[in-house]
Length: 330
Image (cartoon, rainbow, N blue to C red; front, side, top):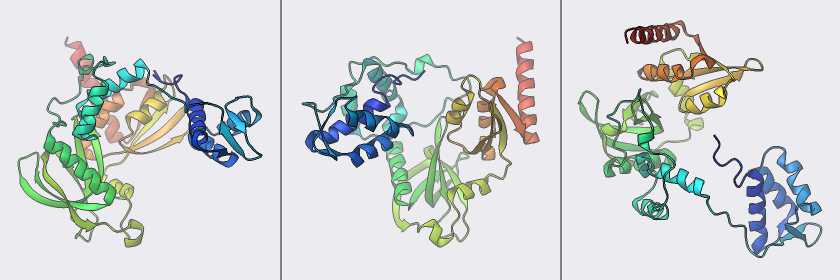
């Protein structure tokens, strides 16, 4: 279900932006074309400006051959609907949201949505394939470490941190953060990073965020990759996997293609169309995520077929055999 497809749609956003520009000053034909192309669909530039210029949509007053002004006394105001507020409240109740806002922003959002009933909450979902010991997203230290990592990725700077592995081994690390990824199965964030910037070889490591303490930025900054010969992130990740990509054949039934692209958005993948109703999607993955990927693929049922490699196909068959035996024993 697309909650907001009919509420303040694309054309509404385009006209509102044009009128906002025309409210304090005039707006020119090139500016109208630019706004339409930037906010609209491919074909929008063929319809929207012409309807405004001709007066079919009577929002603008023509001042001269190139300049227009708004006919409205005030700028368009787009208040949130109850449905939108309830959707936002549901997102706000997710503990992961605190990673992206500071305390002041969270307090302001909480006050704005205090009288709104969430559209859903955690109790409405049963996660049958998720571990229960996920990360503590609302922890002040975890939130600060997360933000420091994001800042390091944006500024291309290395970080220092204390790290405790899943086996309890403690070490001090320095690395260059490249990407954060989320595991729905483990309910955890992981950091993909280049090993110490002083290393001559480009080696990728993965770290659990809940094992990282005292994350702090350094003054060491990565130079532009195209200038120092370092491979791209995609190339490095594919080299580090050590496994063949899983090849999926997706039939576009029950909106399967769109659901698959959204569901596997966190994976490195190549997708191409084979015929009118079939797409091929090759998913690259780390061996530590194999079981998680297998479960996610099975959740799509018959609209997704695993075409290779044979080792992964055998894992699918074995998993299905076990599920069948479990059902027969009930």
